Image 1 (cartoon, helix red, strand yellow):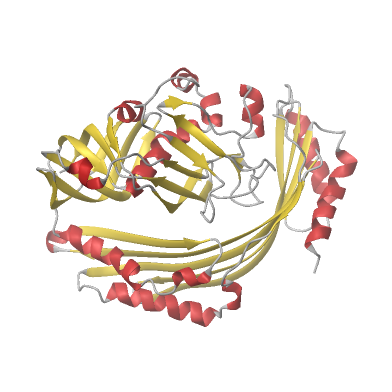
Image 2 (image 1 turned 135 degrees about the horizontal axis):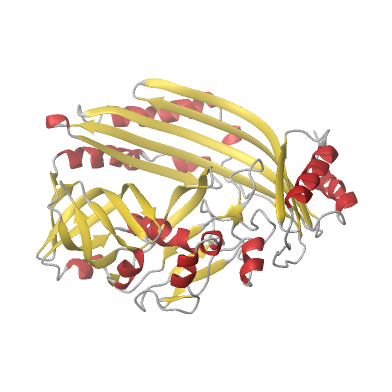
Length: 461
């Protein structure tokens, strides 16, 4: 077995002869081992145990990028030469990369209960127990989608600037979903997920949390469709986090802004774009979350960034290339799904900071409104968005009332951020997965408190 230190040295040694041949060169290599167990209904649907070694080489010359993958070290030099020749074929401009300080580091995982020490049978029995809880909760539960996964990987990175970094990463996840069918063939879904970066034991003793997925689905079977119209809407913390990630976070990714003249006009740094109480962060330094990291996939240190501070657009998310082209600072947001993919500009842990109101204060003076909980699905198109809430409740005379279904929220993100009336004091982060550029699901977190918004278009049936 090749040791981790020699792997780092080997990547640096592979780059050394070619430093002067291109403007920039990097190699990433990832060793990983993973387990997946999945149930669909009563059927054991998948059991997979895998080990992999894969890598990618990026070269840049005169603004032209190439990316070459490999799955063994024997032909590393020839793959480096291939990447260099491809970059030279397409480079016709000027390479613009923000400067960074070379770093040498090894980042180890601080393990609690290591899943690699738990037998495959014990993992299967645990997930089967949770699957049974969902199946037996109510006769209207038609099927389940229950899965367990763990993955431990080490990524080795070296570039032509002298950076040499190794980072270990552990992800342990449980996902629990149900489909319930009621009268008139009404179908509702419920989901719950658990994640840890350090500890298998996070999945033990979570019966009540698992069951909540079934409770939500069955509860929605009794709900009547909401009457479409404009309402004051209160988003729960999960939906508030998804909203800011999907509707605004992607607009903050600098590759999107750089390639979109309209967004360059709308997203001028220093411009007020929301109410003064709104603060939005992208923070890779928060401990233990799926989007947390010490260095991004270009060797840039992780940071806490205020995308919006006191309602003013203050920063955007960058790779070294977008930062260089836009004459801004790199932010540590170049991320790849694995070493077999090139890093692109991605979010980490993105959320709305807490405000000063309790949930009870928020709803107390709403005569008629909608409380939207979690997200079932949605889409964005530039600054326009549409989201479907997983659950909904009417708010009447300052109190939660009957459940409602088919709650879809739509609008313009910039107008919606100005229509925010109150921000709760109860921000939390939840794990998620983000898709972009064919790389999905990239681990991220979405966060926020309860948020109250005026004049939201709510569609029902």
